[in-house]
Each structure stands twice: as C-alpha cells, then as structure tokens.
Length: 393
Ligand SMILES: [Zn+2]
Image (cartoon, rainbow, N blue to C red; front, side, top):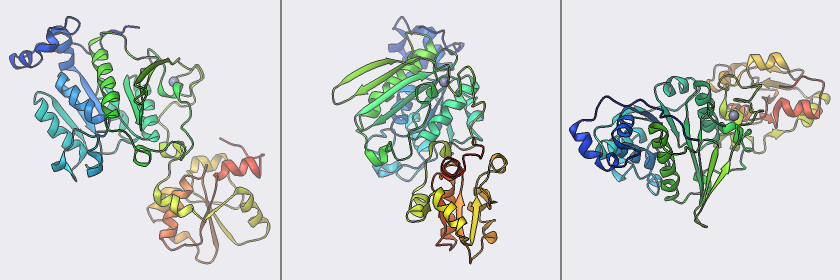
C-alpha cells in the first residue's frame, strides 16, 4: 500500500544543499521534490543508543532538516561496541549532546534539537507533537508501550525497531493506515521473561541492520515513495542471514486502536504495566515476600500487622484488603510518609500486582524497617486466591 508523502516540500534547496545531495537528486523517485521534503521533515529519535546511533547518522546524512534526540543517559565505554555515533572522548557526557556533535560533523545543515531528559507520561505528547515522525530505538517495554500509545493518541506514524543478540525486528506503526504495536503485542512479556540487551547481549552490527531499515522506512514515509512497512513486520535472523516479512493485521480488539478501546489516554505508570522492577526492589523482595494466602493466615492468627496499600486513591476506591491503610507509593519514596510507620508492628506492603510495593519495600528497608515484607501479586492475587467477592480492575 503506497501512501502519500508525510511532509510538504521546502521552498527550495540552497546551492550547498544541491551539491551535497546530488546522489539523491539524480534518483528519479527522490529527485528535487523528495529532497525538499526531507529538508522540511522533523524527525525525533527516541534514544541515541544502539539503534539511535545509525538512524541519526543516516537521517542526518540524508538531509532530514530537523532531528530531535531524546536521551537522558550518558555515554559509557560498554556502549562503544555498537553505538557508533559516540566516541572515546564522549565517555561520561550526555548521549544526546554527544550525538548532536557527531551529526554536526556529518551534516552541519541539520537543525538538531536536544531533549536531554527521560521521556515520561508528562512530556511525551508535548515532545512528539513537535515532530512529523518518530523513530523508536528504545530498549525497554515500558517506553515502547508509551511511545506507541502517545503516537496513536496524537495520530503520528512511527518506525519501530528492536534487537537482541542475533535477532532483530522492525515495522511501521501508523494507526490511521494499519495496526499499532499493541495490535501486534497486546501484553508485555512477564517481567524477567525477556532479558534486556544489557543482560543478554547484542551483536553490535545488528544495530546497523535494523537501524538501516528504520531510516529506509523513514525516508519512504517522508517522501511518499515505495511500500512502507505498515501492517508488515520485518524479522531478521543474522545467523541464518534471513529477512522474513510477516503480515500484521489491525486487531479489532486492540485495547488502544480497536473498536472498543479501554486505553483512551496514556497509562498512569508504564513501569507498573510492564512489571519492571529496579535492582534495588528485586533485592529488597528477596526473602521478604509473602503470598496473599499467607497474609490471610497472619490476619486470622491475630498477628499485629501494619498493612499498607501503596496504590493510588482512585484504585483504593475500587477495592481494598480489610485492615489496610492507604499510603501511596510516592509518599513513601519521597520520605514524607515514613513517620506513619510504627517500629513495633509487622509492616506488610501491597499494591495491585506487586511491582509498586516492591519499590516501596526497598525504600522502607533503607529507612530501617528491615523486617517489612510485601505481598506477591498484590491485591490481584488476594482477589484470586482469598476473596473473589471483591471487585477487580
Ligand atoms: Zn492497535
């Protein structure tokens, strides 16, 4: 399915630009018109890491007029194996700034916008709305779902890529013309099921293989040439040296872009949705986790418990475990609620699914409450195993 160009052409190219882009200008399908569209395009790269490195370099070289870079991380020596936009002298400096320096070296005609911050639910829509197209090179599920949701809510197309060891995937998600990421992956994988590149490794050059597909698709979308990867998933196996294309259909039951959407705005907490917990939280819950049934046994035995629900007030309104008090996670992490915790009672934390309570448990333990525990699976598990009469959500 061919699509019309995403971007209107710029008024004209300068003499410098005509010289620089001559190898594009003599391709009939690109030509002066296509190059003017690239000049007028505003593209945001989410992440200046493995995928962001080649995509930013090639988008800059291709003459994309405005390139946004969002990344909050700094360059580390272990990045250099694949993040080719950064060099030895960049170690310790912000990735967004390091990437901008490299782009200026490749093509000083590009206007680079640095967003040296973490993408979050409060800034994602405002940042995305400044661009025609998003290129997603994130390495975690929480950000991936947030990028998808924001893009769908704003009606923006985005080019997605992911890499792991010798395998890569890429597609174009554009709700107006095809499926979204949630149509393909309705649920995030269970926490711990899919290791990150930091845990599982990635062949450095795989970034170039998938990044080049992403840039290719970006250029096609901007200039309106060829068949974009809308509704198709590209799967790459570097060991077999095989590219396969898989059809992806729009899911009528998609929670976001389906016929009866249940997700109508950004989620409150994508980390929570994806069940991601920090290293500190993982450490804190080891040996300090009880099941919902054990909590019920403790209650029935008359144990002196201080049971704390760390969810938000709106969730507390829906259901609650008898005997619990509400202290939202944020008040615990900020320290303001620590005075409410008694020294002489057994502290038990719970949330919806056990992710937020794990984070809160880490903070409580640091504050000196070494015997505190949290409930595995949270109130969801309580409803499933102890009291099915409670409403669930
Ligand atoms: Zn969808």
